[in-house]
Length: 293
Ligand SMILES: Nc1ncnc2c1ncn2[C@@H]1O[C@H](COP(=O)(O)OP(=O)(O)OP(=O)(O)O)[C@@H](O)[C@H]1O
Image (cartoon, rainbow, N blue to C red; front, side):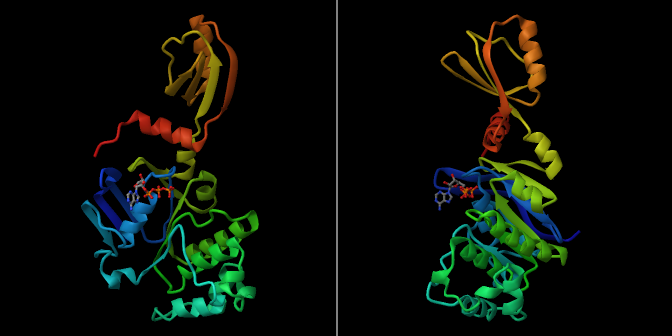
C-alpha cells in the first residue's frame, strides 16, 4: 500500500523539552489512523511535522514521498489544528468559498457544508455560531480542496453528542471514498468509533501501533486500591504508589493479584478495584520503558 506520510527516526526538541524521540511511523493510503495520547504526549508536534509547520530536530519526515516543506506536497493535505481563529464577521459560506478558492478542484460549498451538518448555516456570520458549529466548520474546511490526506488535531473537543456525530459522519464519508485521515484524541472511545488503527504516544514515544481491539486490551488495566502495613512482591503490577497506608496498584489481572495477596497471608482491608483511566494506563506503559532521547 502506498505510504502517504512517513516519519523516519524523527526527534523534535523544543529547547530542553523532548517532544518526540526517535519516532518511526507510516501513514498508508486509505487508512484512518487514530493518534492517542495524554496531554503533552507529542501528538500535535507530529501533526505539525507532517504538515510542514515544524521541522524535525533530527530524522526525516516525508509527505507523498517528498518534503512537507514543499508547497506542492502540502497542497494534497488538509489540516485542522487544535485551535482555529476564523474571522467573526465573515459568513460561513464566504469563508468556505475563500478557502476553496485556493484549490484547483474544490468541493462545492453546499456539498462541503452538508457533509458536516452545516448546510443551513451558510449565511450565518461566524461570530453567531455556537462553539460546536464553529469547530465543525473548522474541520470541514480541511476537506475543501479534496485532500488525499487530512490531519485533524482533537477534532471533537468541546462538542456535544449530536455535533460529534455530525462530525464523525463527515470524516467517515471522506474515508469511505478512499480518503486518508490521521486524527488525534485523548479518548480511545472516539478513536474506536472511527479508526481501525491506533497509534499510542506517550512522552514523545510510540507506545503501541495496533488495532483498536489490541490497544483496548493493552490499556484495559485496573486500579487496585487497598490498605496494608506493607505489601510483598506481587505479580503483574505495572505501577504502584503508596500514600500513607493505602496502596494504589495498576494491574492487568486484578483477580490474580487478589489471589496472590491472600495466598501471601498479608493482612489488608478496604479493597477497591476500578478500571484505570487511559491516563493511568499510559503512565503504567510509559514507566515500564524509560524514555530515551
Ligand atoms: N512551541 C513549543 N515550545 C516549547 N515546548 C513545546 C512547544 N510545543 C510543544 N511543546 C512541548 O512539547 C511536548 C509535546 O507537546 P504537544 O503539543 O505535541 O503534545 P500533545 O500530545 O499534542 O498534547 P495535547 O494533548 O495537550 O495537545 C510538551 O511537553 C509541550 O509542552
